[in-house]
Structures are given as C-alpha cells and as structure tokens.
Image 1: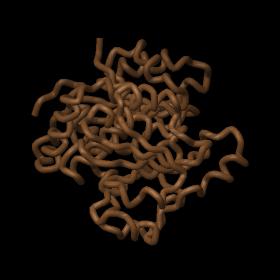
Image 2: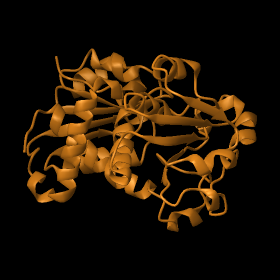
Image 3: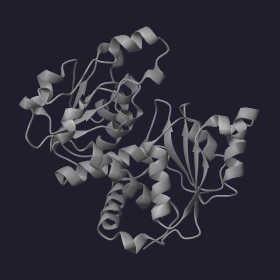
Image 4: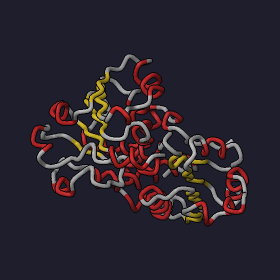
Length: 306
C-alpha cells in the first residue's frame, strides 16, 4: 500500500524534523535536487479553487525535474459527468506517481486514498485539514525562531472553519512548552473536538479571548486568518464577522520586536498592506517555504534520496 499524508499527524515529530532538514538543504543547494524526480509525474486534482497550494505543488515538482498533470476545478473533470471521486482518483493513479488532492468535503482525500495505487497528499479538505500548509508553517516557524518549542502562539480570526489552524494546533501540540492563545468572535471559536483532542487531553494550557489588543504583547507568533466566505451558509453572518480583526501598524506598536506574523493566505483585509513592510511580517517568506517543504515531502513519499 502506498503511504498517504491525509493529516499532519500521519508524520511523526522525527519525520517532520527530517523534512525540515531536507527543505533547508534544498534552499541551500537547489542544483543538487534539480533532477531528483526526472521522469516522475505529479497529478494535482483540485476540486476546489486554489492559487498558492496548487501552484506550489506544481512548482515543487518542476523544480525537482518532474512533470505535472491534473485539473484545477471539478467542472473540468469527469466528476461533472457523474463519475465518483474514487473512480477519478483510481484512473489518475494509473498515470501519475503521486497525487495532490484538494476537495471541499471533509474526509474526501482519505476516502479517495482507498482507490489510489500511488501516494495521496491531502491539499486541503473542507474545514478539516491542510497538512502541507502546516508543514509550511512549521518550516517557517523553525526558520524564524530556530526551534519548534518554547513559545506563545496566537491564532486570530476564523478558528472554526480554518483548516490551517486545526492542522497547526494538532501539529504543535506534540512539541514542548507551547502556550496557545485563541482569538476569535464567539461564533468562530476553535471547535470543541480540536481543543479536546489536541489540547485538553495533553494538558496543554490555552486561553480564549475576543480581543487581539489585549494579548498581542504576550505573543511570539501571531497566526492571522481570514474569515472564509465560502464556509458560511448565511451571507449576513459573514458580513457581520468578516472585519472582526484587522492587523495594522498601530496594533503592532505594543507587540514584541521579534514577533513573527504568519498568514496562510489568501488575505482579504485582515492584514493591512502597510504591515508588509514590517520586518516582523513573515507571510511572504511562508509562501516561498511552501515550495521547499513540498519538494521535501514529494521526495519522501517517492522514496528518493539525494
């Protein structure tokens, strides 16, 4: 059976460390890896719109000397004719060596993996998980702070539907001495099941608040997220909540000088463009890191050593 990455916890802490080490080596020695995946093919099956994740996967495979095939919306696949996702994945696995799949329904990549002859990487399933974004976040934190333990991280915005938040909370809960601050309106709190499984069971301290201003001086990392219109059933609720938090240079005046600001992107207006010039803004570095960690993951799943 091929190895699949559906949840970030499919990887051990040691394996995540190895992926970060590989990504760091890729950054330092790109030419060393330029033909590592020659004659290998990545299929990107995106049943939901994406810019960064899809292009990051494609860029990663091309940088490894491989090639890419796939589709960027469900309407351009045979699912529009009524074909099941399982049959689509089974078919594509006959053509490719590894598959990156995004789907709006929670659990779809796991179900699809039962039909695949090659490794499946979950590139985001509804409001559930986004393991490669989490690996991107972990690489970024490691590069910014030099460690993956002993800090206070604040998650701000849509914590209810934010699959990147759910994945990162799960991942960081396995490291030592991390304090979690959960900043959101009452309607967008982190789901109870995430708090129970990732935090309460492990006895990890966390704080919930609706005020970013009150906690920003305590944070080593601030993870901003957008309020996701596509996850709301009621547009009135979205319009009421979409501007709950807007990070501006003024709000950062009380923050630590070595604060790292992360955002999985896309942003709407929850981070002012004026913040982009602040040396604490790490989200564009995050974008670049996504390519390198996905290169490392592709190499691992294809069992290619350079």
